[in-house]
Image (cartoon, rainbow, N blue to C red):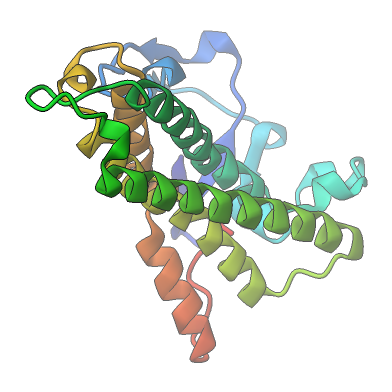
Length: 238
């Protein structure tokens, strides 16, 4: 939530509220990511004491009140470096499932007019290879980044330039998943337009994931480039 900071300028805060202090409005009527239940929350004229308020700037600076008690390395990883990955990595799993189903269902399919196996189409074979390469790249990048986060948490070494690069790694993942799932959808035929089709479900979910602000790679990329040229960091979501 955006609130007025100490100097009067708007900045993002997080508030912890008892269930009685807010209403859930059922607005999540969407084409993808349906199970997240991301409905609207309405808070009307509610007082929130200081001990239930957390500034995102403090989360960026690793200076939250909880750090005094929670000293394990896990709690020394910047919040956004973990949270943004929970938003992006689901697309990798969805793409992996879609590829497995595509290969299995295409294996025995035959063309309508010639009766030839679709699996013998070299264009489809190339698409499978490209999607598999994308998955391998993303899974290796994810494993490498998580290992680096753990090492930096243990050492306390968090240069902002590297944080920006790691943030860009995360947010760029879903765009690559979009390109990959589009290839599979393109060759899935008429069966894929029916509700409940696994590849269609992945197609919709991954495209909806890309719509999340944390999966928009452009501001993160601009920040990485700007830092390289000596400009100030303009992103607290790192």
